[in-house]
Each structure stands twice: as C-alpha cells, then as structure tokens.
Image 1: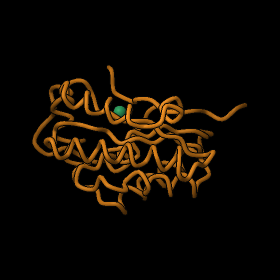
Image 2: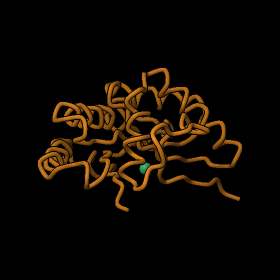
Image 3: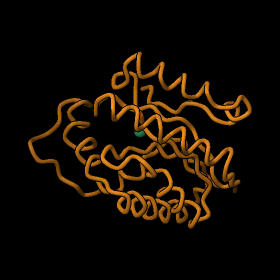
Image 4: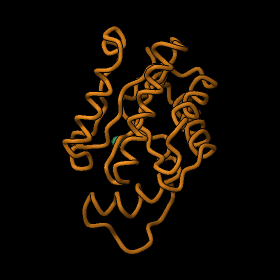
Length: 176
Ligand SMILES: [Zn+2]
C-alpha cells in the first residue's frame, strides 16, 4: 500500500505524552491551550525541537507514514527552529512540509519573528536550498490568535516573494 500522509501535526506535542496538568481540569479549549500547549511551547529550546521531531518521526516510520505536515511553535526559540525540524526529517528521510505558527499571543515582536521565520524558511526551501523531501508553507495559529493587522502583514510578506515561489507554497492555519 502507499505511504500514509499526515496533513497536520505538532512534533513538540511529543513532550505532552503522559504529562499531567497542574491547576485542575481545563473546562474549555482555551484553558487547555493556556495550561498545557502554551506553557509547553514556551519552554522549547532548539535541541528540544529537534529531538521531539526525531521521536515522532521514528513513530511515523513504524506506522507507515511517509509524509508529514508540521505546524511548529517555540515562542522563545523562533529563529532557525524550522531548520532544527528539517534536519530531523531529512535525517529520517521522511517527506515533510514545515511552517511556523504566527500568533499575537506573544506581542507584536513575537508575531514579526514568526513571520520572518516562515519567509526565511520558504526562501531556503524554494529558492536557495531546494530538496525534494522538504516542502514549506506559511503557518498561522488561528483566527482567534491573529488580529487582522497581523494577517495583513503575513499576506504582504508572501506577496513580496517571487510569483513562482508563491505558487509552490500557501498558508497553513487551524480553522476548526
Ligand atoms: Zn494543530
């Protein structure tokens, strides 16, 4: 049978396996984000990003998944974070499409860093160092964490790329 394709995931979520939440049971999705995911991703350093990806990639190989889309966030270690994941996916020989989740939750500076990381990685993958195993998209967290001004900046950053590059990529965002 052909390899399976995972169209959305977060390698860093590997670190949540078996983790218990301090401070009670979340009663809604926003509380899950605040008590688990946004605490976890803020703690990530480059080495964590790479090893979380390697563990998930080993499991992907065992399960027959050959292509993965990863929607990454590490607010205190943004620049170069997609390179850490790419080194893991290439080492594993798994096809991947990688992007960084732009969000307003860490202020305007955090959003701009996320935009820069997406554009840097898109240029690297589609212009400077293309690799058939590596694809890229422009990541956005979600409508409720990105204001209109940030979304406009993301669109404008994409429009500054050459047209042939724009055609090979797109936006990746949580919609539900
Ligand atoms: Zn997600």
